[in-house]
Image 1 (cartoon, rainbow, N blue to C red):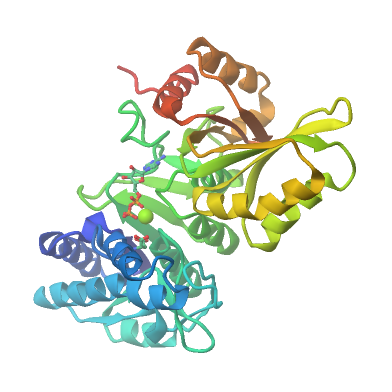
Image 2 (cartoon, rainbow, N blue to C red):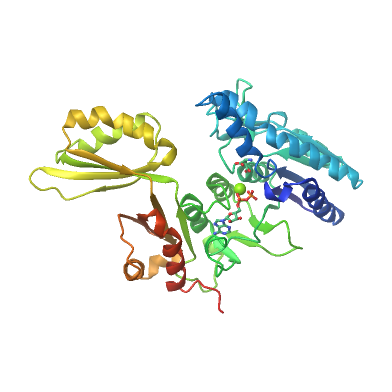
Length: 408
Ligand code: ADP
Ligand code: ASP
Ligand code: MG
Protein backbone atom coordinates (compact mmCIF):
# COMPACT_ATOMS: atom_id res chain seq x y z
CA UNK A 1 0.00 0.00 0.00
CA UNK A 2 1.30 3.42 -0.93
CA UNK A 3 0.18 7.00 -0.63
CA UNK A 4 -0.16 8.45 -4.11
CA UNK A 5 -1.03 11.98 -5.20
CA UNK A 6 -2.72 12.22 -8.60
CA UNK A 7 -3.36 15.50 -10.38
CA UNK A 8 -5.85 15.74 -13.25
CA UNK A 9 -5.72 18.73 -15.61
CA UNK A 10 -8.55 20.72 -17.18
CA UNK A 11 -9.03 18.62 -20.31
CA UNK A 12 -9.06 15.44 -18.23
CA UNK A 13 -12.03 16.75 -16.21
CA UNK A 14 -13.54 18.78 -19.07
CA UNK A 15 -17.01 17.19 -19.05
CA UNK A 16 -19.20 15.16 -16.67
CA UNK A 17 -18.32 12.04 -18.66
CA UNK A 18 -14.60 12.72 -18.27
CA UNK A 19 -15.00 13.35 -14.55
CA UNK A 20 -16.66 9.95 -14.26
CA UNK A 21 -13.89 8.40 -16.29
CA UNK A 22 -11.26 9.80 -13.98
CA UNK A 23 -13.26 8.58 -10.97
CA UNK A 24 -13.14 5.05 -12.42
CA UNK A 25 -9.36 5.30 -12.76
CA UNK A 26 -9.09 6.46 -9.15
CA UNK A 27 -11.30 3.56 -8.06
CA UNK A 28 -8.91 1.11 -9.77
CA UNK A 29 -5.94 2.56 -7.86
CA UNK A 30 -7.92 2.46 -4.64
CA UNK A 31 -8.89 -1.17 -5.26
CA UNK A 32 -5.19 -2.00 -5.33
CA UNK A 33 -5.03 -0.85 -1.73
CA UNK A 34 -3.45 2.58 -2.21
CA UNK A 35 -4.29 5.76 -0.34
CA UNK A 36 -5.17 8.52 -2.78
CA UNK A 37 -5.07 12.28 -2.71
CA UNK A 38 -6.49 13.74 -5.91
CA UNK A 39 -5.85 17.29 -7.09
CA UNK A 40 -8.06 18.66 -9.86
CA UNK A 41 -7.98 21.69 -12.14
CA UNK A 42 -10.97 23.68 -13.31
CA UNK A 43 -12.84 22.17 -16.27
CA UNK A 44 -11.14 23.01 -19.58
CA UNK A 45 -11.75 26.62 -20.64
CA UNK A 46 -13.29 27.64 -17.32
CA UNK A 47 -10.33 29.65 -15.98
CA UNK A 48 -10.11 31.55 -19.27
CA UNK A 49 -13.85 32.19 -19.21
CA UNK A 50 -13.68 33.61 -15.69
CA UNK A 51 -10.69 35.82 -16.53
CA UNK A 52 -12.50 37.23 -19.56
CA UNK A 53 -15.61 37.85 -17.50
CA UNK A 54 -13.62 39.85 -14.96
CA UNK A 55 -12.02 41.93 -17.70
CA UNK A 56 -15.43 42.81 -19.08
CA UNK A 57 -16.28 44.47 -15.80
CA UNK A 58 -12.95 45.98 -14.77
CA UNK A 59 -10.32 46.62 -17.46
CA UNK A 60 -7.49 45.68 -15.13
CA UNK A 61 -9.22 43.47 -12.58
CA UNK A 62 -8.34 43.94 -8.94
CA UNK A 63 -5.97 41.02 -8.17
CA UNK A 64 -7.61 40.09 -4.87
CA UNK A 65 -11.06 39.91 -6.40
CA UNK A 66 -9.70 38.12 -9.45
CA UNK A 67 -8.41 35.33 -7.20
CA UNK A 68 -11.75 35.11 -5.38
CA UNK A 69 -13.29 34.58 -8.78
CA UNK A 70 -10.92 32.31 -10.72
CA UNK A 71 -10.53 29.96 -7.77
CA UNK A 72 -14.20 28.99 -8.17
CA UNK A 73 -13.36 26.91 -11.25
CA UNK A 74 -11.53 24.35 -9.15
CA UNK A 75 -14.17 24.44 -6.43
CA UNK A 76 -16.70 23.12 -8.93
CA UNK A 77 -14.51 20.20 -10.04
CA UNK A 78 -13.58 19.00 -6.54
CA UNK A 79 -17.26 18.62 -5.68
CA UNK A 80 -18.05 16.92 -9.00
CA UNK A 81 -15.14 14.54 -8.54
CA UNK A 82 -16.21 13.62 -5.02
CA UNK A 83 -19.75 12.98 -6.22
CA UNK A 84 -18.49 10.77 -9.03
CA UNK A 85 -16.35 8.79 -6.56
CA UNK A 86 -19.27 8.38 -4.16
CA UNK A 87 -21.37 7.17 -7.06
CA UNK A 88 -18.85 4.34 -7.46
CA UNK A 89 -19.26 3.46 -3.81
CA UNK A 90 -16.06 5.10 -2.57
CA UNK A 91 -15.69 7.35 0.43
CA UNK A 92 -14.58 10.77 -0.79
CA UNK A 93 -14.28 14.27 0.60
CA UNK A 94 -13.40 17.52 -1.17
CA UNK A 95 -11.44 20.47 0.16
CA UNK A 96 -10.62 23.91 -1.18
CA UNK A 97 -7.04 25.11 -0.80
CA UNK A 98 -8.04 27.29 2.14
CA UNK A 99 -9.72 24.39 3.90
CA UNK A 100 -6.68 22.09 3.73
CA UNK A 101 -4.99 24.57 4.51
CA UNK A 102 -2.50 25.48 1.85
CA UNK A 103 -0.86 28.61 3.20
CA UNK A 104 0.65 30.94 0.60
CA UNK A 105 2.26 34.37 0.55
CA UNK A 106 -0.02 37.28 -0.33
CA UNK A 107 1.01 37.75 -3.97
CA UNK A 108 -2.42 37.52 -5.61
CA UNK A 109 -2.54 35.72 -8.98
CA UNK A 110 1.01 34.35 -8.53
CA UNK A 111 1.22 33.29 -4.90
CA UNK A 112 3.82 30.86 -3.62
CA UNK A 113 3.04 28.01 -1.25
CA UNK A 114 4.59 28.54 2.18
CA UNK A 115 3.29 25.50 4.06
CA UNK A 116 0.62 22.82 4.00
CA UNK A 117 -1.27 21.59 7.03
CA UNK A 118 -1.67 17.94 6.13
CA UNK A 119 -3.34 16.74 9.35
CA UNK A 120 -6.90 16.79 8.08
CA UNK A 121 -5.92 15.04 4.88
CA UNK A 122 -4.09 12.32 6.81
CA UNK A 123 -7.06 11.76 9.10
CA UNK A 124 -9.41 11.34 6.13
CA UNK A 125 -6.99 8.98 4.40
CA UNK A 126 -6.73 6.88 7.52
CA UNK A 127 -10.51 6.78 7.49
CA UNK A 128 -10.51 5.29 3.99
CA UNK A 129 -11.47 8.44 2.11
CA UNK A 130 -10.18 9.58 -1.22
CA UNK A 131 -9.25 13.20 -0.53
CA UNK A 132 -9.98 15.58 -3.39
CA UNK A 133 -8.17 18.93 -3.22
CA UNK A 134 -8.69 22.00 -5.40
CA UNK A 135 -5.57 22.82 -7.39
CA UNK A 136 -4.20 26.29 -8.13
CA UNK A 137 -5.37 27.92 -4.88
CA UNK A 138 -4.45 28.67 -1.31
CA UNK A 139 -5.01 31.17 1.42
CA UNK A 140 -2.68 33.83 2.82
CA UNK A 141 -1.96 34.70 6.48
CA UNK A 142 -4.83 37.17 6.49
CA UNK A 143 -7.30 34.58 5.19
CA UNK A 144 -7.51 35.94 1.63
CA UNK A 145 -7.96 33.47 -1.22
CA UNK A 146 -4.89 33.37 -3.47
CA UNK A 147 -4.03 31.57 -6.71
CA UNK A 148 -0.71 30.15 -7.84
CA UNK A 149 -0.40 31.35 -11.45
CA UNK A 150 -1.53 29.62 -14.64
CA UNK A 151 -0.94 25.89 -14.59
CA UNK A 152 -0.67 26.09 -10.79
CA UNK A 153 -2.55 22.86 -10.08
CA UNK A 154 0.63 20.97 -10.95
CA UNK A 155 2.33 22.78 -8.08
CA UNK A 156 -0.53 21.98 -5.70
CA UNK A 157 -0.10 18.30 -6.58
CA UNK A 158 3.65 18.23 -6.07
CA UNK A 159 3.51 20.34 -2.90
CA UNK A 160 0.93 17.98 -1.39
CA UNK A 161 3.05 15.00 -2.38
CA UNK A 162 6.04 16.61 -0.67
CA UNK A 163 4.09 17.49 2.48
CA UNK A 164 2.57 14.00 2.73
CA UNK A 165 5.82 12.30 1.71
CA UNK A 166 3.83 10.47 -0.95
CA UNK A 167 5.34 7.55 -2.79
CA UNK A 168 4.72 9.24 -6.14
CA UNK A 169 3.07 12.31 -7.68
CA UNK A 170 1.31 11.46 -10.93
CA UNK A 171 0.37 14.31 -13.26
CA UNK A 172 -2.40 13.11 -15.56
CA UNK A 173 -2.92 15.21 -18.68
CA UNK A 174 -3.99 15.00 -22.33
CA UNK A 175 -0.64 13.65 -23.58
CA UNK A 176 0.97 10.44 -22.35
CA UNK A 177 4.17 12.02 -21.09
CA UNK A 178 6.81 14.63 -21.75
CA UNK A 179 7.78 14.71 -25.41
CA UNK A 180 10.91 15.83 -27.23
CA UNK A 181 8.85 18.89 -28.15
CA UNK A 182 5.16 19.86 -28.13
CA UNK A 183 3.52 17.00 -30.06
CA UNK A 184 0.84 19.42 -31.27
CA UNK A 185 3.48 21.27 -33.28
CA UNK A 186 5.72 18.40 -34.35
CA UNK A 187 3.88 15.13 -35.03
CA UNK A 188 7.26 13.35 -35.13
CA UNK A 189 7.92 14.22 -31.47
CA UNK A 190 8.67 11.23 -29.26
CA UNK A 191 7.71 10.53 -25.68
CA UNK A 192 10.68 10.50 -23.35
CA UNK A 193 10.77 7.60 -20.88
CA UNK A 194 12.76 9.75 -18.51
CA UNK A 195 13.99 13.32 -18.36
CA UNK A 196 16.27 14.79 -15.71
CA UNK A 197 15.00 17.44 -13.31
CA UNK A 198 17.48 19.94 -14.67
CA UNK A 199 16.26 19.42 -18.20
CA UNK A 200 12.61 19.52 -17.17
CA UNK A 201 13.24 22.78 -15.31
CA UNK A 202 14.76 24.30 -18.44
CA UNK A 203 12.00 22.92 -20.69
CA UNK A 204 9.29 24.29 -18.37
CA UNK A 205 10.90 27.68 -17.97
CA UNK A 206 11.51 27.95 -21.72
CA UNK A 207 7.89 27.38 -22.64
CA UNK A 208 6.93 23.69 -22.42
CA UNK A 209 3.78 24.16 -20.41
CA UNK A 210 3.21 20.46 -19.76
CA UNK A 211 4.39 21.15 -16.17
CA UNK A 212 4.30 24.45 -14.33
CA UNK A 213 7.90 25.40 -13.54
CA UNK A 214 7.26 25.76 -9.83
CA UNK A 215 6.01 22.19 -9.63
CA UNK A 216 9.33 21.01 -11.05
CA UNK A 217 11.28 23.21 -8.61
CA UNK A 218 9.29 21.76 -5.72
CA UNK A 219 9.79 18.20 -6.88
CA UNK A 220 13.54 18.78 -7.22
CA UNK A 221 13.84 20.41 -3.82
CA UNK A 222 11.82 17.82 -1.91
CA UNK A 223 12.83 14.86 -4.05
CA UNK A 224 9.28 14.02 -5.06
CA UNK A 225 8.99 11.15 -7.50
CA UNK A 226 7.19 12.88 -10.36
CA UNK A 227 5.59 11.23 -13.38
CA UNK A 228 3.55 12.64 -16.30
CA UNK A 229 0.87 10.34 -17.73
CA UNK A 230 -2.22 10.36 -19.93
CA UNK A 231 -5.68 10.36 -18.39
CA UNK A 232 -7.12 9.08 -21.65
CA UNK A 233 -5.12 5.91 -22.07
CA UNK A 234 -5.10 2.77 -20.05
CA UNK A 235 -2.18 2.52 -17.69
CA UNK A 236 1.05 3.49 -19.40
CA UNK A 237 4.41 4.32 -17.86
CA UNK A 238 4.42 7.96 -18.98
CA UNK A 239 7.56 10.00 -18.34
CA UNK A 240 9.48 9.83 -15.09
CA UNK A 241 11.43 12.91 -14.02
CA UNK A 242 14.75 11.59 -12.73
CA UNK A 243 17.70 12.84 -10.78
CA UNK A 244 20.73 12.79 -12.99
CA UNK A 245 22.81 10.70 -10.64
CA UNK A 246 20.23 7.91 -10.95
CA UNK A 247 20.87 7.83 -14.63
CA UNK A 248 23.31 5.38 -16.11
CA UNK A 249 21.91 4.77 -19.56
CA UNK A 250 23.35 6.46 -22.60
CA UNK A 251 22.05 10.01 -22.72
CA UNK A 252 21.02 11.81 -25.88
CA UNK A 253 22.91 15.07 -26.33
CA UNK A 254 19.71 17.04 -26.86
CA UNK A 255 16.61 15.90 -24.99
CA UNK A 256 14.09 18.41 -26.21
CA UNK A 257 13.16 21.61 -28.00
CA UNK A 258 11.11 24.25 -26.20
CA UNK A 259 9.59 27.42 -27.58
CA UNK A 260 7.51 30.30 -26.39
CA UNK A 261 5.72 33.22 -27.91
CA UNK A 262 5.16 35.02 -24.63
CA UNK A 263 7.92 37.57 -24.86
CA UNK A 264 8.43 41.00 -26.39
CA UNK A 265 11.69 42.69 -27.31
CA UNK A 266 12.74 46.26 -26.58
CA UNK A 267 15.85 47.83 -28.13
CA UNK A 268 17.23 51.21 -27.12
CA UNK A 269 19.44 52.69 -29.83
CA UNK A 270 22.24 55.15 -29.26
CA UNK A 271 22.76 54.67 -25.55
CA UNK A 272 25.83 56.40 -24.04
CA UNK A 273 28.42 53.65 -23.41
CA UNK A 274 29.35 54.34 -19.80
CA UNK A 275 29.27 52.59 -16.41
CA UNK A 276 25.85 52.42 -14.81
CA UNK A 277 23.83 52.60 -17.99
CA UNK A 278 22.41 49.07 -17.77
CA UNK A 279 21.29 49.81 -14.25
CA UNK A 280 19.68 53.09 -15.31
CA UNK A 281 17.69 51.29 -17.99
CA UNK A 282 16.73 48.14 -16.12
CA UNK A 283 16.46 49.55 -12.58
CA UNK A 284 12.94 50.96 -13.00
CA UNK A 285 11.86 47.76 -14.77
CA UNK A 286 13.05 45.64 -11.86
CA UNK A 287 11.51 48.02 -9.32
CA UNK A 288 8.15 47.42 -11.00
CA UNK A 289 8.64 43.63 -10.49
CA UNK A 290 8.93 43.06 -14.23
CA UNK A 291 11.19 40.11 -15.05
CA UNK A 292 13.76 40.68 -17.74
CA UNK A 293 14.77 37.57 -19.65
CA UNK A 294 17.37 37.96 -22.37
CA UNK A 295 19.71 40.95 -22.52
CA UNK A 296 22.10 41.93 -25.27
CA UNK A 297 24.41 44.93 -25.32
CA UNK A 298 26.56 45.56 -28.37
CA UNK A 299 30.18 46.63 -28.38
CA UNK A 300 30.12 50.40 -28.33
CA UNK A 301 31.74 52.74 -30.80
CA UNK A 302 32.00 56.52 -30.71
CA UNK A 303 30.87 56.30 -27.09
CA UNK A 304 27.49 54.85 -28.07
CA UNK A 305 25.95 51.40 -27.91
CA UNK A 306 22.60 49.62 -28.47
CA UNK A 307 20.85 47.78 -25.65
CA UNK A 308 18.16 45.10 -26.13
CA UNK A 309 16.16 43.00 -23.71
CA UNK A 310 13.01 40.90 -23.56
CA UNK A 311 10.11 40.91 -21.10
CA UNK A 312 6.86 38.95 -20.88
CA UNK A 313 4.25 40.27 -23.31
CA UNK A 314 1.94 41.04 -20.40
CA UNK A 315 4.55 43.51 -19.12
CA UNK A 316 5.48 44.93 -22.52
CA UNK A 317 3.41 48.12 -22.51
CA UNK A 318 4.19 48.86 -18.90
CA UNK A 319 7.91 48.44 -19.59
CA UNK A 320 7.72 50.84 -22.54
CA UNK A 321 5.97 53.43 -20.37
CA UNK A 322 8.59 53.08 -17.65
CA UNK A 323 11.37 53.55 -20.20
CA UNK A 324 10.10 56.85 -21.59
CA UNK A 325 11.60 59.09 -18.88
CA UNK A 326 14.80 57.01 -18.81
CA UNK A 327 15.30 57.30 -22.56
CA UNK A 328 14.80 61.07 -22.36
CA UNK A 329 17.15 61.36 -19.41
CA UNK A 330 20.04 59.41 -20.93
CA UNK A 331 19.39 61.04 -24.32
CA UNK A 332 19.20 57.76 -26.22
CA UNK A 333 18.54 58.05 -29.94
CA UNK A 334 15.46 55.85 -30.37
CA UNK A 335 13.49 52.88 -29.08
CA UNK A 336 12.53 49.95 -31.28
CA UNK A 337 10.18 47.33 -29.95
CA UNK A 338 7.89 44.53 -30.96
CA UNK A 339 6.11 41.51 -29.65
CA UNK A 340 6.18 39.42 -32.82
CA UNK A 341 9.09 37.35 -31.61
CA UNK A 342 9.54 33.80 -30.39
CA UNK A 343 12.20 32.14 -28.31
CA UNK A 344 13.28 28.68 -29.44
CA UNK A 345 15.59 26.63 -27.23
CA UNK A 346 17.42 23.32 -27.40
CA UNK A 347 17.88 21.61 -24.05
CA UNK A 348 20.07 18.71 -22.99
CA UNK A 349 22.50 17.76 -20.24
CA UNK A 350 24.60 16.06 -22.91
CA UNK A 351 25.65 19.53 -24.08
CA UNK A 352 28.09 19.69 -21.20
CA UNK A 353 30.30 17.08 -22.78
CA UNK A 354 29.74 17.84 -26.45
CA UNK A 355 31.06 20.75 -28.48
CA UNK A 356 29.48 22.12 -31.64
CA UNK A 357 25.83 22.14 -30.59
CA UNK A 358 25.50 25.89 -31.10
CA UNK A 359 27.04 25.79 -34.57
CA UNK A 360 24.76 22.90 -35.60
CA UNK A 361 21.79 24.90 -34.36
CA UNK A 362 22.80 28.13 -36.07
CA UNK A 363 23.61 26.40 -39.36
CA UNK A 364 20.22 24.64 -39.42
CA UNK A 365 18.44 27.95 -38.88
CA UNK A 366 20.58 29.73 -41.47
CA UNK A 367 19.78 27.07 -44.08
CA UNK A 368 16.11 27.93 -43.64
CA UNK A 369 16.83 31.67 -43.91
CA UNK A 370 15.81 32.28 -40.30
CA UNK A 371 17.53 35.30 -38.79
CA UNK A 372 18.70 35.09 -35.18
CA UNK A 373 17.99 38.28 -33.25
CA UNK A 374 19.32 37.33 -29.83
CA UNK A 375 21.15 34.37 -28.31
CA UNK A 376 21.56 33.18 -24.75
CA UNK A 377 23.12 30.04 -23.37
CA UNK A 378 23.57 28.10 -20.18
CA UNK A 379 25.43 24.88 -19.54
CA UNK A 380 22.50 22.78 -20.76
CA UNK A 381 20.54 25.03 -23.15
CA UNK A 382 20.87 27.38 -26.10
CA UNK A 383 18.05 29.83 -26.79
CA UNK A 384 17.54 32.10 -29.78
CA UNK A 385 15.03 34.85 -30.42
CA UNK A 386 13.60 34.80 -33.94
CA UNK A 387 10.68 36.29 -35.87
CA UNK A 388 7.49 34.74 -34.50
CA UNK A 389 6.33 33.60 -37.94
CA UNK A 390 9.21 31.11 -38.16
CA UNK A 391 8.53 29.42 -34.81
CA UNK A 392 7.11 26.16 -36.10
CA UNK A 393 9.61 25.88 -38.92
CA UNK A 394 12.52 26.45 -36.52
CA UNK A 395 11.23 23.88 -34.03
CA UNK A 396 10.71 21.26 -36.76
CA UNK A 397 14.13 21.83 -38.32
CA UNK A 398 15.93 21.66 -34.98
CA UNK A 399 13.96 18.59 -33.94
CA UNK A 400 15.19 16.87 -37.06
CA UNK A 401 18.78 18.07 -37.09
CA UNK A 402 19.33 16.85 -33.53
CA UNK A 403 17.99 13.42 -34.38
CA UNK A 404 14.84 13.65 -32.29
CA UNK A 405 12.35 12.69 -35.02
CA UNK A 406 10.52 9.43 -34.62
CA UNK A 407 11.99 6.78 -36.90
CA UNK A 408 9.62 6.62 -39.91
P1 ADP B 1 -3.39 20.19 -18.20
O1 ADP B 1 -4.64 20.93 -18.47
O2 ADP B 1 -3.59 18.72 -18.03
O3 ADP B 1 -2.58 20.78 -17.10
P2 ADP B 1 -1.65 21.43 -20.16
O4 ADP B 1 -2.34 21.97 -21.36
O5 ADP B 1 -1.26 22.40 -19.10
O6 ADP B 1 -2.55 20.26 -19.55
O7 ADP B 1 -0.33 20.62 -20.59
C1 ADP B 1 -0.41 19.59 -21.55
C2 ADP B 1 -0.05 20.15 -22.92
O8 ADP B 1 1.31 20.57 -22.93
C3 ADP B 1 -0.10 19.15 -24.05
O9 ADP B 1 -1.40 19.05 -24.59
C4 ADP B 1 0.92 19.66 -25.06
O10 ADP B 1 0.32 20.32 -26.16
C5 ADP B 1 1.72 20.69 -24.27
N1 ADP B 1 3.17 20.50 -24.36
C6 ADP B 1 4.07 21.46 -24.62
N2 ADP B 1 5.30 20.96 -24.66
C7 ADP B 1 5.20 19.65 -24.41
C8 ADP B 1 6.16 18.58 -24.31
N3 ADP B 1 7.47 18.79 -24.48
N4 ADP B 1 5.69 17.35 -24.03
C9 ADP B 1 4.38 17.12 -23.84
N5 ADP B 1 3.44 18.09 -23.93
C10 ADP B 1 3.83 19.33 -24.21
N1 ASP C 1 -7.12 26.22 -13.79
C1 ASP C 1 -5.82 26.86 -13.72
C2 ASP C 1 -5.36 27.29 -15.11
O1 ASP C 1 -6.09 27.10 -16.07
C3 ASP C 1 -4.80 26.01 -13.04
C4 ASP C 1 -4.45 24.72 -13.74
O2 ASP C 1 -5.18 24.24 -14.60
O3 ASP C 1 -3.40 24.16 -13.42
O4 ASP C 1 -4.31 27.85 -15.24
MG1 MG D 1 -1.28 22.43 -17.02
